[in-house]
Length: 216
Image (cartoon, rainbow, N blue to C red):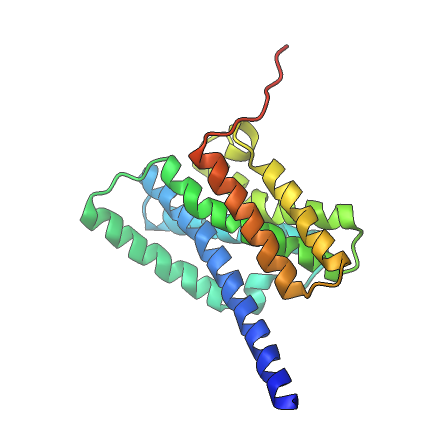
């Protein structure tokens, strides 16, 4: 029985890490595509990629007073982003592809789901109230993309894209809160929340869902 329990704990631990890696790389890829679209050099590409991948999580850690920052504690994040930047630059230049704004939306949706759910769960485990935890999840998922867009001289997509983006993250954060409240494990809460958020964002892209706009 103890052996089965240790195997289960190992699976949850490493599955959670793999899930975080997927989310980080998804946002990194969105940053890479945006940098490639703007035809930045390798230094600019690496900076935009780092901001997209680490910006939201870093702000969350600052607000929650968590040290060291998540990417300082696990240096694999840094190496993964550096290698990905170099490979992506070579691929784009040799394949002569022209990344579009829409192309960044797909990996960005995956990162949105994983980072919102993960950020919300981290805040809950830090003892934050439900509403604060959800806001932390939104910050984790959205702020990196905001920095990415500002650096490449774009109005942040989260502010001007009339497709639901931050709204989906906010709603999905409550899925994590609800699952945690009914006793689901942290891993299950994050996985289900991430799937719900990513799925809704995919649907918003495919069917061109729009939020109402203010008219003055």
